[in-house]
Length: 372
Image (cartoon, rainbow, N blue to C red; front, side, top):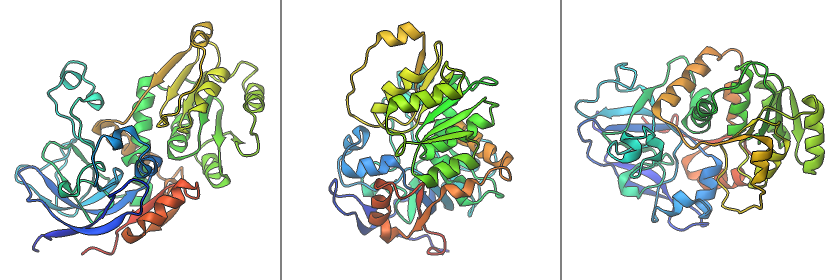
């Protein structure tokens, strides 16, 4: 079958304005490059902030761009020399894969610190000019030769695994930096979006004590319960942070949780997290994209002897670990319920708006069936 020469793609041309659908040329497939058909692309809060021009890393990329960094792709063409994924498993036409962002492998952060997520020359899928064809809100994505990929287990559905491509791999990476959840530790999770939900199920499977989720709306909190939350606090009902703290102290022997995980993206959550955490506790910040400044008293960190950990993104190994987690627990938790609605490529503006309004947990662009 002859490979397509053009691909439909949604192009963000001006921040805050409706996205347009265009046909863009498909690049020549270099050695070790891969061309994939996009089967599913998730929409997350980052995409909403990016669309509005409120995301620092997005504003570093001049418009126009193809958005979408959370992607499941089916291999259409393999460039010469690209035979296996990172696990050494053979790659074939028709396999479903995920891939990490591209790191240079040459800078100080890549080579000396061994922290490729801090790469000085990192290139992001979902942040580049349409000519690169490296955004998920399209029919196809061009995967460059240096990009590391992992094959998706055949027994897992797109709906079960789409969250690995963004939120869950970030949670896995963050939990590694945290040192994991120790047996019996009480955990409070701020936010019930995808990061909060995956943090919930990961805490439950880590033999946490009580897992308490603060968030909303009701649909997200209902899924949090299915994924292992012992208690949920509805933020639209318990609006006073002091009252939320009181409830949490009552649930944690008056001391507060040993671990707090921020997954809300709300700058005000930081002060609340530091205030509620137990002395000697650990605070993992995963969801913070807000550029809003907040007032803070640094001596609280010393007075309470707490550890604050920031974590962003992940490497391909975290994708693999997240996929294996879902495979092991596939019949224990309804992972597919993270997908709250499916949209056609041409409905991208509606999908983004519904995500912005909090109507969705995880809306996706679903191309299944439209491509041959």
